[in-house]
Image 1 (cartoon, rainbow, N blue to C red):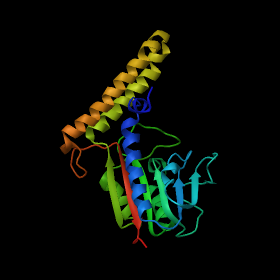
Image 2 (cartoon, rainbow, N blue to C red):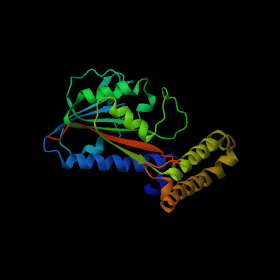
Image 3 (cartoon, helix red, strand yellow):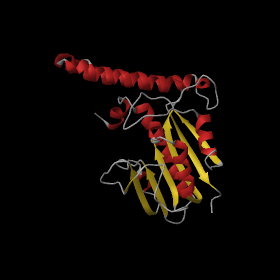
Image 4 (cartoon, rainbow, N blue to C red):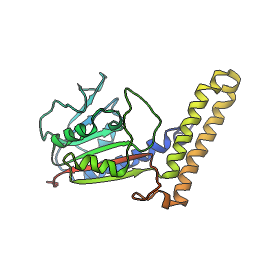
Length: 244
């Protein structure tokens, strides 16, 4: 299956693809303003899936921290207590992590503490999502809530970018439950599993494409500050002081 088709038939396409595009653009814009090597901290790094986005930037360090050990985890700790010096980082990633931490304000406060002047925090978290306790799942957000979270924990230059519009958010949930239904019901029967797998891909792909198309046709349901809107995700770009 070609790469693009494989992505479109994924139940997570409407969340992951536009988030990846927005994050890559933010990192590229950041790289255009940097002349010296930078230090990057990846909070909740997992397998560091976003490190390759920094290939065009000269790196001094790329530190990965997580609550579990791993081959690319440099420090095992929680985001509320990061054992690093004040003003020691130029860029901090916190991608799809804030919904899992006990105290999001403390984590954002730690990001603010660790950033040098001109440094930037790039954080994303869910607008809508199924409950997924891995290991815990505490929070869901709005654009106003995220702005308040960052502004009350030290940041003053804050941009909150909605990811996916209302129809994409609804389509994302439909695709997720279609995938869950197929895994828990259809695939228990061998015949249905053989018939259902390609059909599932087709249906999920149609749902994903339909959600994106409806967002384009009816943009007033997806304006960033509009009422009665839903978003799959949000990307926060929060800067520490002026760029030097």
